[in-house]
Image (tube, rainbow, N blue to C red; front, top):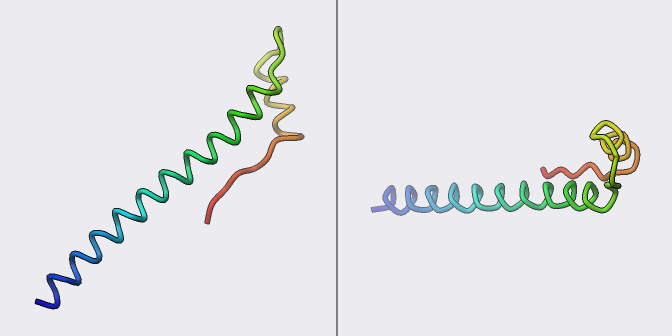
Length: 63
């Protein structure tokens, strides 16, 4: 009985961690995309936009 409950807890914990990881990745992508959308100017090359991001963009991460 105890091991069954323990396995359920482990399964739920894994599902919660996976969900949190996906949300964290989405939040990081949102930060990058917002910077790129706000700083893109017509005629700008991808290299120029990347240079802007490298200098001024946030470096989102999660632990």
